Image (cartoon, rainbow, N blue to C red; front, side):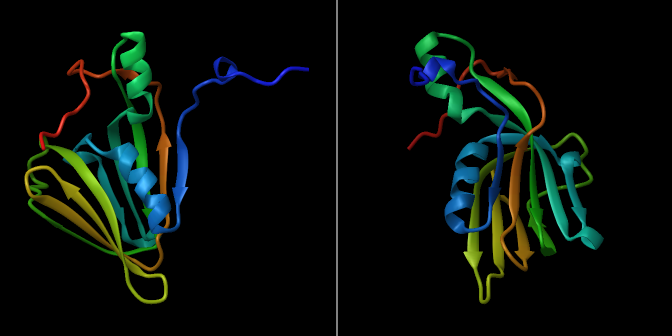
Length: 158
């Protein structure tokens, strides 16, 4: 019997959950620079669920792609928040069905007794604020990775 090596591992679609700020930071890192049409936001008050269908950059694969000199990738993923009591947004024109939004960050501002606010900050001064009874987020890849249309990794000048 031998130990498993790294090459024996297989990449698998992400399926992550977050119930605290530390968990959410992992999801935030993996969804930074995700893009999505305004039409792919869903708020279901009766289910207390807010969801986004994202085209996320595969940050977890960036270094491997660079080392192997292959294309950077994106993948479609669903980002879901449960236990949502209220949704508010600013800087988003929901009537513009062709609008593409870019997710910059996801933060949690805790309140009392586990409740709080999830803030989704978008490029161009847009934002979505979710009032939540408890932090309950899920990120799940739902397609196979595809070549990033831009051909390169997102970059933020400092």
